[in-house]
Image 1 (cartoon, rainbow, N blue to C red):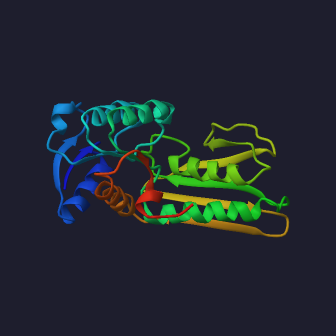
Image 2: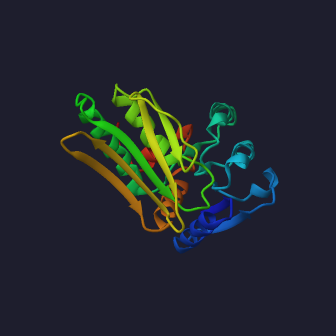
Image 3: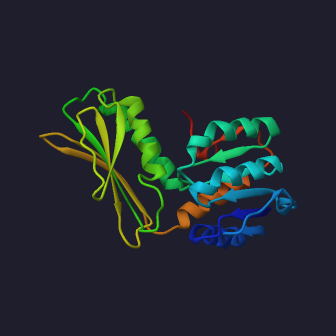
Length: 242
């Protein structure tokens, strides 16, 4: 398979290494320089892992060129509806994930099930902690937002999530779901969901040891997407049933 990598930072380079190891060819590597539809010709699929400010334009270029695109960049979702409309208009498949790691996507399922179980247990308060490297541009992480949104679907006593980061803190009430965003040097990504009562605490957590899990998931998604139609997620790639 011929893969275009849009965003050639640490993650893009990790994806390149794994893709080549799996027998794929890298046809385009986009760093800070832009690209156009012509640059994508000859590619079977694109993997977009750039920065939030560039993501929507990058995705649009891929869709218009008819190149299936796997998107790992987060914090661009204000443009999501427009991108879906463009994908539909051009008939180009799109796969978005806040986290490509197989382990994290299994963690998402555990989080949903735990939230269902904890909904009637009103004596427990729920919170989220996420820890990432200092270079991460968004807070909270896209993964933490996905975790929070799933909790909000099932836990009736919480209305919205609120991010707490460093000195940038917000006064919250009992209906708020707190996300503690911590930035530390050299941390690929850790997410913890905690339910606490006066009696005990229940926790589930996922800790990434390196970027390889994210890179592998992105390549698996890129292998799966060509030939598909519509909008997809890692649940489709991993055949996780609702």
